Image (cartoon, rainbow, N blue to C red; front, top):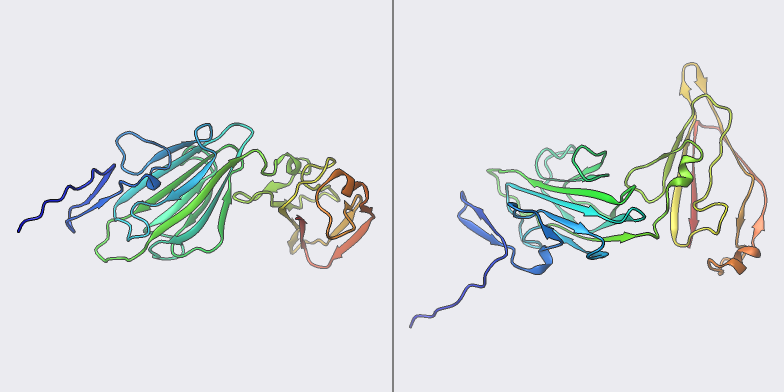
Length: 273
């Protein structure tokens, strides 16, 4: 007896000639945006089409193919930023510098934009934010003789106007730490003082954010600076059970706090839930 079956059409085929394997990525979950012409796994994701969704590597959770070059370009509105959270990340690990398979994330639309990071191996709790309304993610796998049994990655992405605006950092000559929502780095330039602010100050602060401030004094044979932190305005709810509302903040406490650190750097964390 002979059985006949119809093979459903695939949206894309990835053909590995050496291993004689055909990978099919016909499922809609792999199609995250508008396909880039003449590519098999590159897409443009526009916020005016969809504000959030999934980003899944080809054939996930099966073993991903070799010799791939995928690009995912996120383009939002000028008022938006992008958040990318990897729920699962499992790539071949060839060393700390990721010389083989990798995911690269750029803070812009092209590979000439500042690089946020290069990732391979297994990653945990990997969350990345764009500085502005665009982000580029590349996924590259090399042709190898040895076989690897890695799944690839599964992530969720979101465009939003609610992520922290970074203009509060530029007020004090700080530097935004790329890839974070609102962490900043402040390096001493021989100046005696400066100011740091919470996001959205002097207006109502934002709920459910974590911002970290890293302040570094000079440390060399000629300099050994200490950091002194004075809270000139400290206005948060005194009741731990209160939430972000104008009434709660009117009932908050305000006081001055002096902090002196004997080492040349200090990390300050601003958190509101």
